[in-house]
Image (tube, rainbow, N blue to C red):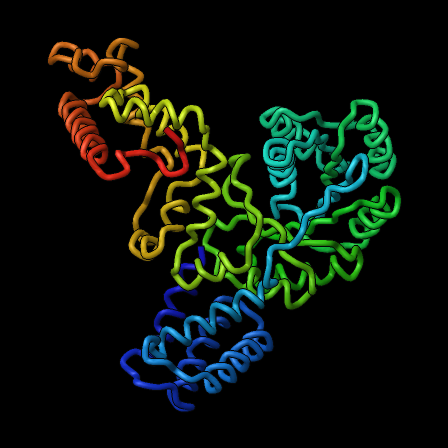
Length: 440
């Protein structure tokens, strides 16, 4: 995500490397490179120029103290301006009303239906809501089928009327069904087109008029860059939507949509989405995105993802086993599964400061743990709980059962033992290996 933009911005800051102070000349050169990087990222020229003019004005007016280099100061100024350009602070998402009504709009192929499923999952699991999704795309039967499958995956009901060709009446009937079933959020997936047309715009405007949603979210494919921004403007002129959702951020996105859309339509980006898994939806934080664009990582989001999967009682039991040097293969397997639930591995590693750049050309497959899981699943429950039981004969059986070579099984066993030794060494530290935040 934004790799090309990050590299070009880093290159721009090199103009100030080794400089003792900020001058109009070295700032001008840096700003010119920043503007070029933004335009290459498909940011509108007017926005790029206004952005860099602000950066230049602030940079020339700043005094560099001894502890901060001109390059560091410029990075801080650019970070602040990027944050402001993308909205400043995270926008509030309203689920008021009984039921709260959320209308999803956008072009066909932007990821509307997938986002509808993800939002239902988010509201159910993160916000404790009881949502219902509504299939209001009366033109594309596959959209109803897709939404039905996604709804089953996340465990929420879907309302659909396959033979009804009146989207407004479908939505009105869905609201009655939601109230009857005590559902407190209704998410409406509307029809899209390959391009903006009057029929689509009129229909979604009529749905809005009929149900008065508390949120109207415009879903945009981040990979379409400036085209996405132009489409957003057309939708906003007609719908006056409340927020934007950026999808497909795991693709080869140049960043233009993320950087330009708030400025253009004056509506906040509320969510960002990547991948097809139903748990890959995040609240959009402008400051965190600015940090990631500048290669600073995003520790706050990484910690939040970990906390979402955190089970305090399980952690306490695990800590006790580690202290007694009883950590086993079953414990290891459970920890792997917790990590996998946090999302795409490469994205997670990219949140660690300095790591994103190092792994940009490395192919990190989400199935990286499958081999290890196969080895552990080929063990008996007794072997998982007692690694010392596993002799050469058992290793041969485990290798055969997991489809691995005996060398791979031996290598994993060795790594596991080294990890246990490291855990044992941690117990000798002043904290006694205790996990922060847990009481004895």
